[in-house]
Image (tube, rainbow, N blue to C red; front, side, top):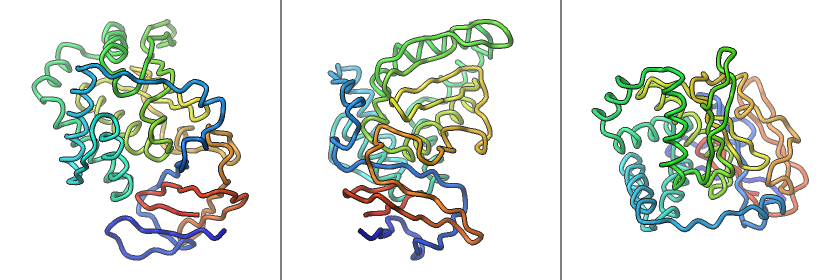
Length: 274
């Protein structure tokens, strides 16, 4: 089966073998049917029963994303949020996605409130613990159930880690690129710049869990495991066809093998269909 490139953004026509990205891109596999997720991941699927507060928060964030991107959809609940994120990933570059999510969060949270939090809670052991507790209590609607865990900070044990058991956003989108460009990177920047708190988000693409480590600076992009997935690393979609990125002097090429079923791959706002 031949791989085809379908452009879904307002940019000049690109070729598959000779594409010159303006910035590093993140490639993620997006499974077409849900059954393409491995059996182990399916066994832990969580059924969400969103309450009134959850639905209000989800619809509000979805509205903020739609206003920032200018891309409306008629869906409701978490489906609307996923649709808004999917459209953003298809129409905009990774850097633009990053900026749009930050704009969405700026719309969602009043600046005076963020400034007050930053003033009252400068970086400290107490602040890191409070951030972790607050996240587990008030953001389950976005990322799913989570718990506070310990890590070592400057030789001391602190409860500054949020362990997300199975990220709702990653589970619903099933796309590494959307996780990185629409969640991890912009969230790290927003929390640092708006609240003055460093945070390193560490997604696990094997079981769809994630850890938010407050008080820890994220590594450089070249050293971040989430941004440098090794070839052959098994993921929940490990039965999908394998793709190999080939770094070329004039851009990035893609070769494929083991293509036995239809899938799509998110590449910096474009989609490669097989």
